[in-house]
Image (cartoon, rainbow, N blue to C red; front, side, top):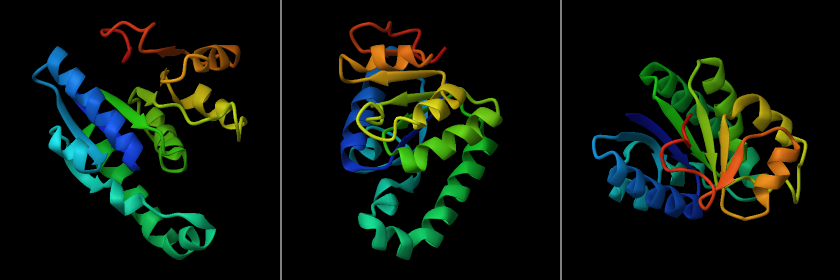
Length: 168
């Protein structure tokens, strides 16, 4: 199995590294590539970009780095689509990952979101994009699956999903 993993920030890197380690225990031949930080790289991620490249805070910094961020997004998108992973696991970082999810869906690559963006707290309109572009949301908070299910999105927590069905 060839898996894309994209974690654009430190907390996502930790969650994704734990997920990758669990996946490798279930399927030792899995190959993971993508965007990650130190923990994901240590877990065996073949890095095509570093999550540190995405780290910008505040509107002024985003505007100043926008050309670089857009170029990075295009480069990652092109490489991922060319490599055609079996599944994409996008971790948090909705400003980077939701446009990527759209492009991947268009290329026929199944998308799973792990660590749901907090749509129930802010920017709830993004749930339409997730319903359109994402096969499943793997939630960490116990009330999130019900929120997503009310909006027609397949979602589960680790307590309710089976280890073999999350990518279908």
